[in-house]
Image (cartoon, rainbow, N blue to C red; front, side):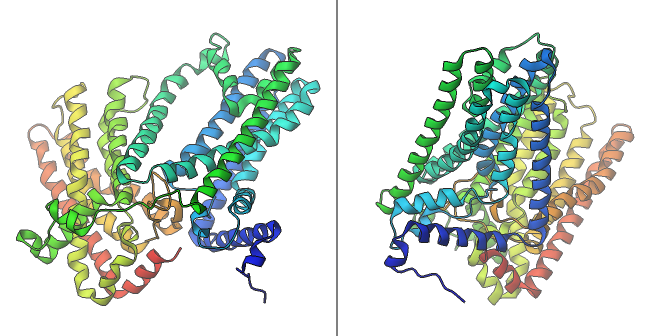
Amino acid sequence: MTTTSFSPTHWNTSDSVWRTVLRMRMTLYKRQFTGGRAVIKVIAALFGVLGAALLCLQASGTSASSSELVSGTTSLALSAIGVMWILMPIMSGLSDDNLHPRQFQLLPLEPVRLARALFSTSLVGMTVPITALAAAAIPIYAATHHPAALPLAIIAWPATVLLIVGTSRVAMLAMSQLLRSRRSRELGLLAFGTFFGGLYLLQFPLQSRLGTVVDGDVTWPLTVAHSIPFAWGITSVDAAAGDAWLLAAGAVLALVLVDLALLWSWQRLVVRYFNGKVAESAGATSVQLKNQGRDIRTGWRASRLGTVISRELSLWHGDMRRRTQLLSVAIMTLVSGFGPLISSSIPFSAAWGAWFLIYLAMAAGSNLYGFDGASIWHLVMIPEAAAADVRGRQIAWAIVMTPFVVVATAAVRIFGDLGTDRLAVPIAVGISMMGVGAGLVVAISAKAPYPVPEMKKTFSFNTRGSFNGSSFGLIILAIVIFAATTAPGVLLGALLPNPVNYFAIPVAVAIGALGAWIGGRVAITRMQREPDRILFAVTTT
């Protein structure tokens, strides 16, 4: 069996650096490609291949009358892929790049060689080949519509793939270096979240006007698509078709120059780590927390349950990983609660906003032990503390999330046209879902925990970079559980006459309390019987 040497001599050759980094990536891929995570990744890859194949098929359309439409829609699709490569790692925490330059800082190697090795080996995996398949729409479009431009398209094909991947890699690394403080990270994540929410709302009016674009009545969206760098390959082909060969060559040349600029930027960002120009981020000290009124040694905080509640409330406010979850919930409060009231093109009612919000809040808190990581070691040593720990986490989650639900529920009643009609229904549904959600939060956290990277090591709006299939499956199953437990309140509130229909509220309270108790018992039992397994799950990547 061979071992990897970390001596300076070994690391002084580019080939050795590249082979070692590649071997590390493949080892991580193998470790992460197991169980439910492997199933989810395979399914996602199949959908990706299907989408890429459909894009290539669409680009091969040969109808002369639709040539401009094919060009524009292909450009829009490539631009959307590029935007997804930037937003997905930030919004979902999912990324195919499993190594970070910071992890190599203590090794005796040249940062320039490491930068090249990290970038080139990051092209290995499933997502980059799928992206390359989608970008193959460029030469396919050229071959079927303007064969003379095929040489330019062949050059633009890998250049576009490199642009998409490089933009994502550089953006993530740059933000992880620039946004070091908690406040700057919050502002950065809020800006990206607002941008993402705006894109989500914008898709509905665009879809409603898609017919005018298809019919050729409106052409400006297609023109805008051609100006986006991710679509410059298509722009080059169209320019060549119009005998504007100088513009065609210029578009491809610009694409290559942007790629070179991205590679240079990546290299400089990696070198910054080794030159000591990236400061370590720091959290609040215990003295600062005490000065902020978070001393847990007095009053109601002195009890076991009060201690847990106080600690959890402090963590939801101070821990950046949990804070990002709150930001996502806050943004979806605006999108789902107020969006349908602002634009009639959004195809769902704002009355559903609060219910969707509770589900999102449950999913956001479904890995509480993963957030804490190794700090839950005391539960392994003292299993008797599990009951107070679980109940305290439930209460704290409900305290934190209830204001968002109240705002979303009140918005549709105050600013919408529903008024107080059948008010018992949203109240009953909200109460039962909050109770059942409190049970699901701790049950899923205990049954399917997974490790969460520290925010100073990554820049992401979410925490599912190391998710597992069990957690994903239980969150999907929660939809069925919510539907079953809210049905009695909905039926009583909707079918019974006023004011008898308000009987749905105490029924919802009973269902919510029962759901919270059952979910808590599941978590407590798991914590008391197998605390070591939970600790291992949240500390092993």
